[in-house]
Every structure is written in C-alpha cells, then in structure tokens.
Length: 509
Image 1 (cartoon, rainbow, N blue to C red):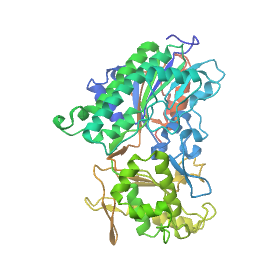
Image 2: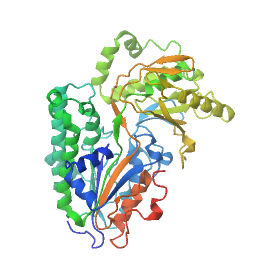
Image 3: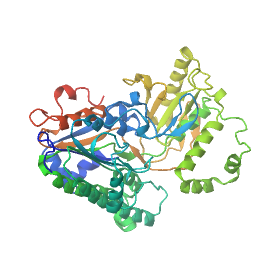
Image 4: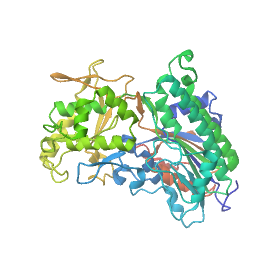
C-alpha cells in the first residue's frame, strides 16, 4: 500500500489485548516472534504505565481516547447507576471518550479499524470499521459502518466468535479451545488482509483478544511436563507466535518498512487468585458492611439460594447466560444489604477491589456524613486494610490503597469509588488472613482463576517517523492517543522522534 495522501506514511496500530510485555520481549529474543524482533531492532520500545492502570477494566477507553479514567468515569464493567444502588453492565462506548481516530473526520484520511477493543463505529469517517467480531468478552453484538462489511466478515471469517474464559475446563476441552484460538487468529489475519485490499488507508488499527483470554485460560499449563498437557505447555507462546506471523503478513501487504508501526500490549498477566473476597469478608467482620436481616427472603431466587447446594449453584452459574448471571449478582447486591446500617461497601468483583463510602447526599440511603465523619471512616478503613496479613508468610496482603480524589484530574468523583485497593500478587489463594486480635477465613468464589493483570502495558514502534532509540521512554496511557495522531498528521522530518523530550516528561505518572 502506498501513501493515501502523498504526505504521511500509513500507520499500522496492532493492539494485543492483555499482551504481556515481559513475554513479548522474551519470546522475541528467543526467536519465536521474528516480526516483533525485527520491529524492535529498527525502532524503539518501552512500557505504558500510570494511574489509569489502577484497574484493568476500561484501560482501552483511556488508551484510545487520551482521556484519563478519572474524567471519563469507566472503572469497571459493572457500575452503579448514579444516585442508586442498582448495578448495570457498561461497555466503553457508554462513556464520553471517543477514540483518537474520531479526529480524522473531514481530513480526507481513510481508516481501517478492525476489532479495536472497547470501540464502536464512528460516523463520518472515510474507510471501514468493524467492531466486536472476535474480541475478548464482547459486550455488544458485532457492528460496522456498512452492512456490506458485516457480510464480508462473515464470508471470510465465519460467524462472530466471543473469546470467553472457561476456568473449569478439562485438559481435553482446553486442547480443543487452543486449536480454535489458533484457527481464529489465522482467520482474522485473512480477514484483515482481505479488507485492507479494498483500498489505501492512512490508519489501520487491528486488535487481537486471544492474548488476553488465552493468557488466562492456559496460564496453569506453563510449568507442567509436556507428556501431561501436550501442546498446552506452550499454548500462550504459540498464540503470540501465530499473531506475530499474521502481523508480518499484514505489514508486508501494507508496505513493510515504509509504514509506521505501533504494536502494544494493553497490560501484562501475572500469578494471582481472587482477592475481592478478602475485602468482602473484612468489611462484614469489621462492621462496615451489614447484611439485611431476613435476607433469605421468600422469593423463588432467595429460596433457590438456600435449598440448592453450593456446588450445584456453581455448576449452574457456569452455564448460565452472562445476562442471567449479572441479573442474579445485581439482585443479591441490592436486596441482601442493610443499606441503613452500612458505612462502606464494594462492587461485586473478583480481583478488582473498589470501595464506596455510603455517603449521605450521594447514596440513596447514605449514613456517613460528608466532612469529618467521611474522613474518619476513610482513614480507619485504610488502616484496617493495610493491617491485614497473610497467615502463611506474615506479610501484608494489600500493597496500596488509593483515594480517587488523589488521582490527577478526578473530575468524575460522583461515579468513582472512594478507594482503589491494590492487592499483593501471589501464586496461591489466600484463604486465611490475620488482623490485630483475630483471623478471617476466606471462602473461594465461584469464579476461581489463577491469574490477573499487572499494572502496566508495553509498546514497540518503528518506521520512517520513529527514531531508532532501542529502549525508549515510558508512556502514560493518555499519551498514546496524541502520539499516534502525531504519526498520522506529521510527515517524516516534521514528526521528529517517537517521543519528543517535552512529551516524555511525566510519562508513567
């Protein structure tokens, strides 16, 4: 592909949802990712970090828009409706944080956006946009800026495929799922090349979700002997390698080294078991959160909770549609809490821990007065959290507690939790927690997974507008969008190095 406007080289942005920077660098160095290795040799790379990584949900909204989450307000896929205790599922498109390519409307530049996570078709842009065709846990049906594009995708790629996680799979089931992932990566590569043959583009954005879902799904197979798990021992590496191969084919089709390329992983993956159950147990034990008296209830759903064994409910919940699971979670959260006796509560989650103070005037039945009482409850809660100790090694289980108001540009305060809790990552489930004067026994939740995310992403870039810097500056999440825009808008010689010194200061903050 040649330049579409005669000025700037095309820009290819490859987004690896959950792509781990340490794994990318390791496997590039070992020769498993030759196209990424070539990109690094002729360009630069670094980390993406900062306050937006305080939770993993919604990170793409900040990355694509350049707007911090403390302004757009997206902190979890399950959030409160303002002024209520009602939980609702929310996708990134529900927030006022449009992706950076929105700025290309009216410029004559053509875009091709295929499965960029947490995005939606933007009206008024020239080119093609296909969203939610094969992504990690989509929250919308596939959509496109033209009906013919949906038909083309189905013809070339097959039916849409949701990359769901199945933590209770057998080895046999995971082998089938692994082969399906590899097949989907190959199909998506063919789909991308097919769609990119429709013309010349100034910007190409493509997302792969297999690094996220596959990273979690096959995490526990890494250290097992080959005869026990077969190909699954290298399943994560082979997923990365398949994407690297498709990346090389796409780059060659677009123009090779004449193209500006920015490849990034949104966040890493690490050993970690569910932790929000610790928070829930502590809030109840210390009296911050009270269950509603008689919460057993006489409704069918309440009777089912009492009568059906836990193991059966886990199995049933595993096969329930996500919408039905969310309805049950929201109902239990709303109806089983004594809001008139609760000082602090957390959103239902697995690893993310987000605490709201039941503040008078903000919450429907708030009991904590703004001002001095609010500060007292916050301070006591922070101290109690930081005093929790793992019964096995005697070390704190909480790494950091952050008040949302202390994060820069926290303008969406009414929608944000009051506290973000960052837990210590461990390769085992914490089932006993000590506190001054007692011990908490922690029950494992239904959704039991052995991995979570690190608090940083990673990038590599090369091309006519990118300096050959090797290890380069780190970026904050909100620096990504303006940086990519500059690579589209400024031709070589005017764009300068990837990160001018003035932009690099403060990155990762």
